[in-house]
Length: 505
Image 1 (cartoon, rainbow, N blue to C red):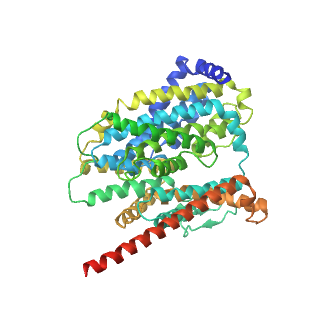
Image 2 (cartoon, helix red, strand yellow):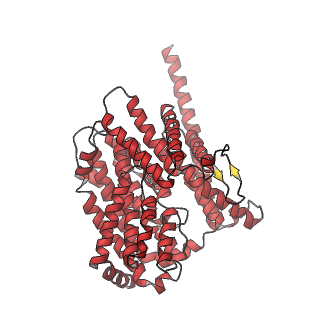
Image 3 (cartoon, rainbow, N blue to C red):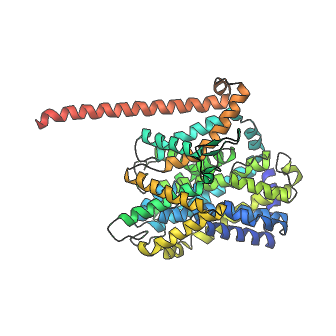
């Protein structure tokens, strides 16, 4: 009953004409920047942060939040249609782009839109009803628990790689090594920079993502002899009833996974999409189709991505810890307006907290109305012959890369990773695990160092804390199961080969 009263109080603030306008502007801008390769909520919020000085506090926070979760859907459009992802839409490239190649682009985008709405709605319910409790739970996570969570995130690589588990882990470790390039924040020493000043700050995530996915995919398509367009076949927007029934279970599973992982600092949309995709690949009735253009491969990750984007506000507003760069900018916006996020925020500023929560559901409705009816418009924009479209894609990739640091070196880095990504594709290596390792590697190192400092170098600390011990136990069970199934598969293949050889002779 108290939750309903709080939500009614929040809607009273969110449904004012002024805040509705700011919410709509945030959703539209977020969707547009999500569509453009290389751009995203981080760059956009950075540019618009000075505007918060002249905008009322509630409206400024609602607009910036709308840009963040609005970009989550926009990201999926470029990932599904052109296989050019942002960090939050890497998994959408797998089945989403396969559906595009099969002429089901409209269905894939409809699935992403509806699943995002479901994921956002579930996350808002979690945020409204469990924010104080979940904030206190998040406080109980120590460095060892975060470290175990990062290791558990690496397990998800086995679900997204198209090759063997060993190949996937190798790519993941390569991503971890790339994440170590730059200046060590603890010691100030340069690592793996090869004396190049452009690498002192490390490798740009935008450069890596656009190179390994965007430019590599463009090069691969240009290397093909046949005439290509981003998608082919008749545009089919609305799913049939059997297809719609496949969307709902996967979207609900993804919503739960995303809502949980978004709460934990160190979780968030990136881990959520991998985890939801892995869960579907294990429990879905159509798990054998996932990876080849299945609806579940789009629905689950889209719902998890959107859910995690909303529940990631819980660590920020309840304990004052931003879990990613976008939340750090949101924290800056709070501080600019004279508000300190933390355990006392709900008590001291209930109008802002509950108004922001209510505006997320309003924004959810805006995104559904904005994106699903306009799917045909996005398709008509992208329905251009590939040899005409690719120069503009490269242009936006370069603009997006350059806009982050205003540096030409980032463009050169993007081109280099484009070549590396093309080589990996030709050798049948999946770049998605590399991205996962690159994102989680620095976080893993930071939490591991903290754990070692607190335990004075004892590795037993990971088994002395219940949460980390549980996560590591699950990790050990999973790896053991994978080894068992691999050995059993090899034994069965050897037995089959032994039976066929006498018959052929």
